[in-house]
Length: 261
Image 1: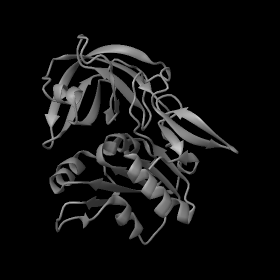
Image 2: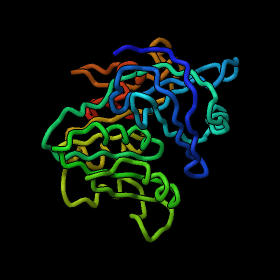
Image 3: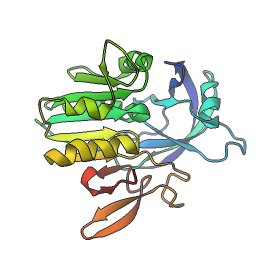
């Protein structure tokens, strides 16, 4: 797959909740991205912010790309103020993707927090012969109501956990919800913060020996494997190696990850 640097114009920058936005912009890359792949975005030509920021590809067509992002810092705050027609620059597609070329399996897609930005493309790409279930975790009730509407859930059974007190969804964290499941999948694919992924692995996946793949969310600088700023410890046989989330990942086998949390 060719990695290209492209200038693009924003088609829409839609506010979904108080802190979440869905940005759509022109697609200039002819290749089709895989689920969990990402792009690095620079929002202007100024020195500040200097570095591009990585965002998982939420959706893709030949004409446009969309990303889901949360306003949590200076760059995403500036992004939230961009209007239709504003020019941005993106670099991609980057990273290793989830393997969606599987058939006739019971598959669970799991996402917590901004990790839901990476799971939507997985739902688009997974073959229809699989029995796919979706597990989502949110902090706030309104986030669950608004964000879940944007996910492609045709023929997908959805389960939602919300930490905030509510009467509509499971109250608690995502791992607590999954532990109540009466069935077990053939495979698990998950995106989310390391604490969630660690809890998921140690409390469920390892216990039932389920094949699983995680998309890691480490902070990145260059995004192309040069700076070694996003490494994670990965088991390879009898050795432990430092692997770059941006280049060697972000997808790794869950059983190979040495979690820091």
